Image (tube, rainbow, N blue to C red; front, side, top):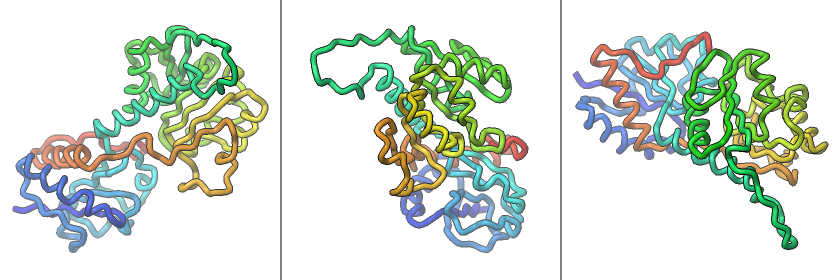
Length: 306
């Protein structure tokens, strides 16, 4: 029987994913028809992006899984009509993109590449082993980025809400663990999911716990940072600089103070883009697993929200 796979996404997504998904289905030996419209009761799987007009999943009574094109699922996980299993996107290219983004900006701050050169005044940076980098979030992306920095010799500590063990990284959890990581982080990277427990985790109180002159890199979620508190900390010098890739409102409004602040680098949500070829392979492999009676990979915990 031919599977019906509904690509439920916004404008232009079908054109990007049509050929890669069909090729990935063929590579997995799946007899699957990719469609953008179908009777809900005929749909076997939904490939989903939050820009989709599909918001009521109740009519999709035959659907065996919803497969997100995005790593973040905060805009769908709480949907009360979603009773089907939900898989988040864990794409090797997405992970590699995030590793490159984080490594690049950590090295930029570590080496002082933003420092203006108005005269010949050599300032030798410390070696990586003497630079302390902290991570808030040790999930798939956080671990990959932290381990990349460990491989370069950085002194890396990480915090997660539940206990983790990652080779080469001083891992902490809980309120006391958060304080320890903040206090030792000359460069702090935030890669937590967007949940009620992580909202505004960088606020006036926690920013004050960082070493004076710390740098912040946030490619995680815009809601992790209390914007007014960060701007105030930048103005006092408590925080020397911030590189921000994600925001509460996107695109970032033209009048937002981040655009004009001399110590803020704004990037337009580019740290970890989903790439059609590799994402399609992930989706097809997951569908093949379910068809073979195997567990769905990267299934989202509804209670945890990720």
